[in-house]
Length: 208
Image (cartoon, rainbow, N blue to C red; front, side):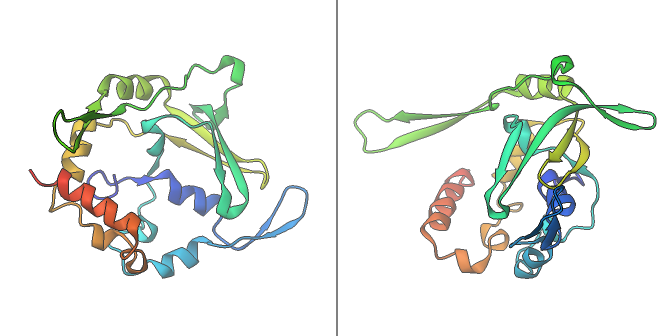
């Protein structure tokens, strides 16, 4: 979304609104000292490119939840939780829709990962089954949301992107000219087992 669609996904905006500075005042008046604030993360990730953390793009959209809507999230590094509710855009702003009147529904991930054992071989083939219809339905019924942090007594409104094509997405991530993991992951993590496994998977996806 950042590279091809001129869109920033919601994680950066959540940090902008809720976790931008280290000293946060709760609605009860208590002060919380947060680690991993946004400016610290930006400084640590100067060597990753392109990095949405350093983007000046303010066109934020709700992207992650296109792979399955999560109404509640735990941000453990910050000792905080956020929630999402349906909202309605009006001429003079936004209005949160009462749960009883909400029309959006939770939906399963449009990406099915299917491992198949290869008979007579010591291997497994993994297939990705894409369900574009569930994405299209989500975009039609779940247009706008309010994201809230009750602990901090803050909130903001955000919308889904106008469209999202799963085939285009996979064409992007399997393109060697588009994705280079060594440029996207901090150097200190590149010797880890997790990175090596991720690199091994990507090498296979990008083999064609």
